[in-house]
Image (tube, rainbow, N blue to C red; front, side, top):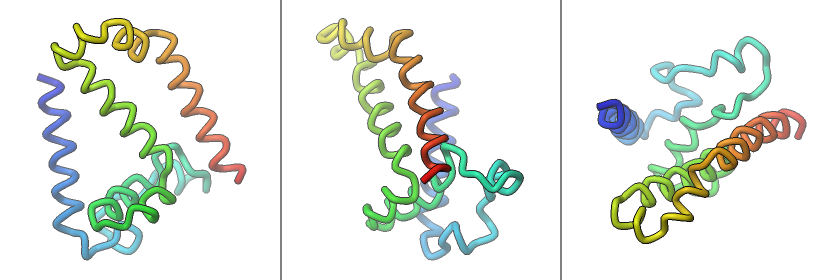
Amino acid sequence: MFIILGLAAVVGLVLVLKFYQQHNPEESSIFPKCAFFQLTGWKCPGCGSQRAVHYFLTGEFSKSFFQNPGLWVMSSYIIVVLILKIPYMKYRFPKLSREITGLTACYILFFSIIAYWILRNVF
């Protein structure tokens, strides 16, 4: 149930960004601003995601990548995990499925996000 609601929310967001592509999220007031950035002046790991999706949907892939490179990496990881959750793939590659979604992978993912958060504010 939660997966279906989550997918519906993502599809809804993508449709809004696609149909409002003439409105750049940087310039439009209909898109929310990052509260963390507004309070601290530092970028969170998700800062630039709306702009990245906007540029991706309008075909400007290099602009999309530079708005939030972490979004591209996380999207790739999520796609691989979802593919490995397909029953055929799960049974075809059981070790890979366990490794990529196991506890060690979660720790690596967590610390990668923290490192990305720090590095994007340093450089």
